[in-house]
Image (cartoon, rainbow, N blue to C red; front, side):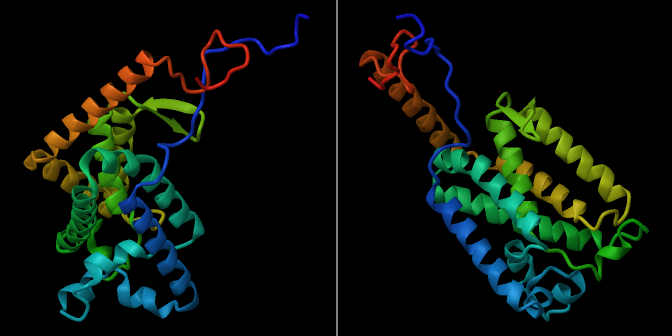
Length: 249
């Protein structure tokens, strides 16, 4: 009867952080809805995208907020929303929806203000920012990446879904790339200065804000209790290693 049952294994695989949380779900749906609308009404991109010359002229003071919900193409919104889901869900569970949303918008608006400030710097590498149009949630997403790297520094992030890199080093790499690219001029047309602004603003905001520490402790205590109850009642995700039928007990 050998070979009738599969060989036992204690290894289980999963992708992503699990079920989606309320704020992340709302942000993703809103970004998708705006993407569809602007696909058919391109003139809205010029009105809602971030352009320092317009925002500071008092003609479009809403742009530091609305630019976050616009995207330049399918690949742009796909990777931003994928990153928001993968890294934002666990942060929202830990912080709570209110603090997560506040942090998201602080990073996004802070990234926009960074772009506006840099547009005044009298250097050739920043002179294009004054009249350039910036769109995308990347500034806020970079802030999310920073927070994830600070709270879960050793979590592996798979670059190109192949190469595992600890989250803290992944954030350092992304920040370094944005810094070098922003110093290199317009480059590929990606708003690297805005990305860097999201990282910097997120760092100083978290450093200044301490109220989320209690939420973090509660989150870790809850995880510890859940894992303790699983061991107490002999519960194993995917089945026990010595169970040939691999049922969930």
